[in-house]
Structures are given as structure tokens and as C-alpha cells.
Length: 185
Image (cartoon, rainbow, N blue to C red; front, side):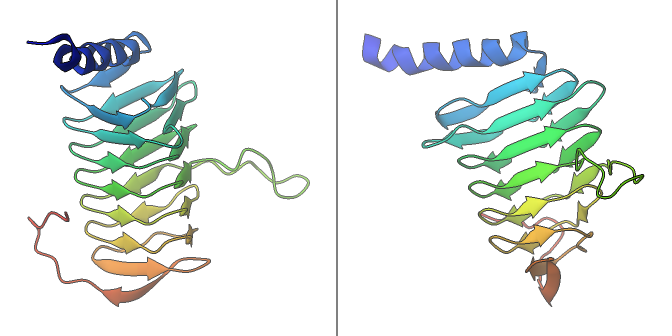
């Protein structure tokens, strides 16, 4: 085996080891195209089998604050510049496609008006969900299996399974026909 064929494997192993040192639980192999994810793990981060990160122009950023968790299911794909910050819990299912610059926050960090509470609530994304470019997901939302969220939408309320949703705020536009075992490519 020539050195130039061996080098990418060495880099992948070192990067995976770096994630494990930061307390990231990895089911088995993960893939990074370009830059490896920028991880701050003060809580719990779990990555399923075959999770793929694409960081060509900007790294994916994962941050689990103390006593919080991030869980990403098998064969989910996270594109350039995705930001996931958890203060409670963010769960992403299997076979999901997360577009460029998507941002997912389970807290709003500040009160809206004097005397109000900071909103903090778990986010759950089902299996085989496609989230388009520059979508923002806010605290407490759930997205059902097989749904698609249109580019630049702001998801403020839960979205049912098997729908296309878009807009500000995102609302279902139409139904999607998808068998339970369907996997989007």
C-alpha cells in the first residue's frame, strides 16, 4: 500500500479518536468530507453508524451544554455549516438529510419580555426527514417521519409526518406518499 493511500485512513482514525476523547459516543464508522465537525461536549453526544459530515466551506458545529444531549441516528447526513446546540435534548432520526447552514436550538437563551421565562424544550426529528438549506428549528418542535422542510423556513411548531412544510413560520403545504421503509436518497 502506498503512503498516499494510507494517509486519509490515518487522518480519519485520528479525527475519530479526537471526537471520542471529547466524550462523543460513536456507534462505529463516521465519515467527514472536508473539515471534521467542531464539537463542544459538556453533556452527551451520540452518533449512529455511518453518520456523514460535509464541511467543505464551513465545519458542522455540535454543542451539548451541561446536562443536555444530542443524538444523531444511523446514516444521517449533515451538510456545510450546520449548527446544533442543545441545552436539553436534540434527537435526529435515521437517514435524515440536513441541508447547508441549518440551525437547531432547543433554547432561546433569553427572556422575550420582562418577567418571562427562557424557553427551553426538546427537539425531535423523525426518520428519513429532509431539512432544506438555512432552515431554523426552534425549541419544542417535532418533525414527523418522512417530512420535508423547505429552504429558509423557520419551524416554530411541530410538523406532522409525511408532509412538505415551508414558510415563516413553517406550515404543511402538501402530503407526501412514503412507505414506512422508504429511504430518501
